[in-house]
Amino acid sequence: MSTIEQVLEKFKGIVIRVPSLYSLSPSWHPRVVPDLDGKIEEHVESWRQRWVPEPAAYKQSLGANCNYCVRAISPEANIPSLQIGARYVSWLFAWDDDLDLGTFNGSARQRELIRIEVLRAVQKALLGNTVIEKPSDWRDTPPNLAESFSDIGFSLQDGTELEPLQHFLCDTLCDYITEAVRLEDVSQDGIILDLDVYLEGRMENSGVYPTIAQSLLLQDIALPAWFLKHPIPMKMMRHISIMVALCNDIVSAHKEMGCKRIDNIVPLLVYHQGLEPQEAVYHICQIIHDSYTAFENLVPEVLALASENGLAAGPTFVTGCKDIYIGLANWTYYTKRYHDFQPEEGETEVLITMG
Image 1: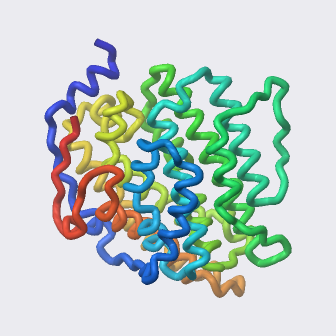
Image 2: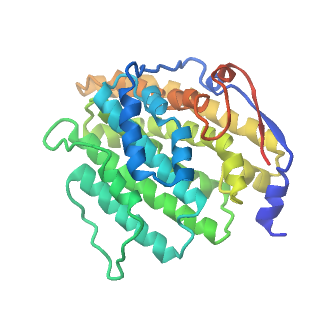
């Protein structure tokens, strides 16, 4: 029995208790804009039917409830912007599913070619051009990952106050794609990552930074490049990334271990620190709550930084960051992507069978 199989064996028949995800950030409350006439769902469904035609993948995408997700993380956006956001979230989940379910099981070079093609599509869609050249051994790859991004509908904002945010979205999304492929290389090689290495990579491959950027962009929140790169706002965004990534690891662990993978903080804590699965989950919840506390402590600094530099969007940036975590926590109870949770379970502990 391999080491990975031994780790997976520790989860067989194990049921863990997951505290209310709302309780980990007690002063934050979810806000969800309604889709009163169904226009958002209608829009994302047309995208889904075009780009996710395979029945099993389509069912997975439908169960993700991307419509609700974007309405929860971008509650101040208008309907046309939410339509774009729902397609973007659908694309992120389609990419993640391809990673988990075997599309990338070829050689490392094949994965690298897919990565390059997707990066080129992202840069063209968001910036109007790409600086990445086609390699000499270029070949056509499955088109959906690249072409479907071009069909999301992001509009270029050259010469406007939103341009820096659009560049930030492009840069962080490209970082996310690159790190996700690197992690897939590691997984295919059967390598068990050290905790610190995993957590650092998880900050990139969780997709949180580009999701913050697209949410702010869809809500027309203009932020200059210097602010997005300043250590204090960057630290604030990192805490949101920690909260979202580790929350997602808890609820998706059983799905990933079902694919014989342990590139997830829950089994890695069991392996590296000898914790029981339940102990690992409670430890992760404490880390999430600690990041919530650290975020709250940073709020006065971020607001002062914005005010001192005549930037009116400081409070909106802070609220937008909060909406990402609490919106995704809320969405967890409305999606069938990981579990058959019910909305009212958000107020209580939930039992999850891990293996």
